[in-house]
Image 1 (cartoon, rainbow, N blue to C red):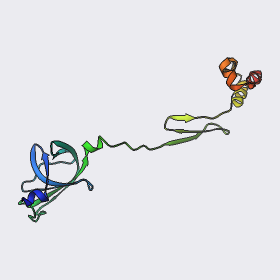
Image 2 (cartoon, rainbow, N blue to C red; image 1 turned 180 degrees about the vertical axis):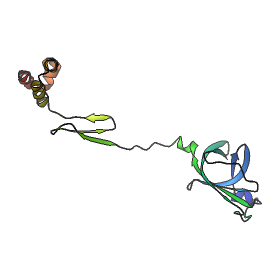
Image 3 (cartoon, helix red, strand yellow; image 1 turned 60 degrees about the vertical axis):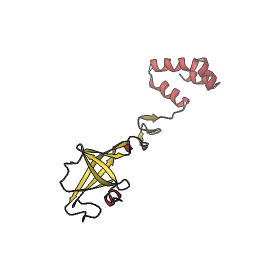
Image 4 (cartoon, rainbow, N blue to C red; image 1 turned 90 degrees about the horizontal axis):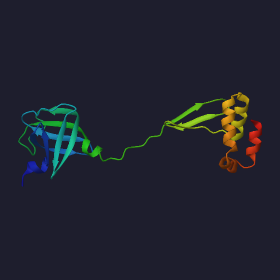
Length: 168
């Protein structure tokens, strides 16, 4: 039985060269024993071979430890520790949803509350008609009157529609 294969069971491809090592997925860490220092840089992508599959890993940080293996389970004296991000796994994770609530005052009587760009404004139909009537805006009055005279709107608003038209 090969002790090195038990201690360092994983295979990593760095710049086309194969290295034996050990990945701790929970800690996002890869340990690679080496004799000649592999050429790696922060931000570089390496590949872990798992059977017929490949896992793409991005190097976030790294540490070189001369004589760090104590030659336990390997003939290589030095240890390379890579702190990694699993790029392949991230592609399959459900994105987290965060809520952003925007609160702003429109006027003294109204408050505007919305999530992201969807704003909600609550005002009664009576308030709307009264404010449009007081505004003196002829076009707004005409459009609102047409809306209230519409049979569908009148059936929803009910008998109050004619009273609201009277305010205009």
